[in-house]
Image 1: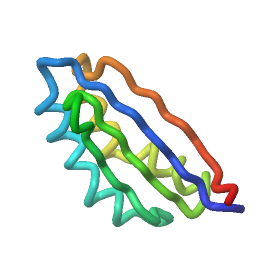
Image 2 (image 1 turned 60 degrees about the horizontal axis):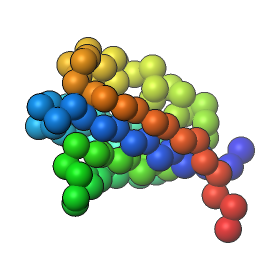
Image 3 (image 1 turned 180 degrees about the vertical axis):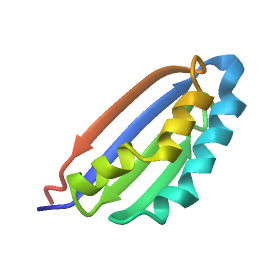
Image 4 (image 1 turned 120 degrees about the vertical axis):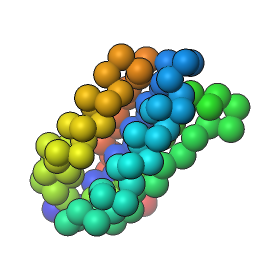
Length: 96
């Protein structure tokens, strides 16, 4: 199976930017240590600080799905409940 690329866009509510950022940053070291994680890079938009983006590569979709059910993601969801205005996730395949 080919590697899986994930592009996840998270937009925080204007009054919750720092909370969402802090919770997203907590995910980085834990996720990078997970089996199958090739890279897990968090970005913040230079013009819209409420917009965050993860660029991730995983060895397989199955290993990414294991990540998606991990306890630290559940903790993030609980901590940011009501603080995220929008979440858009794209599963992508490298074609060239």
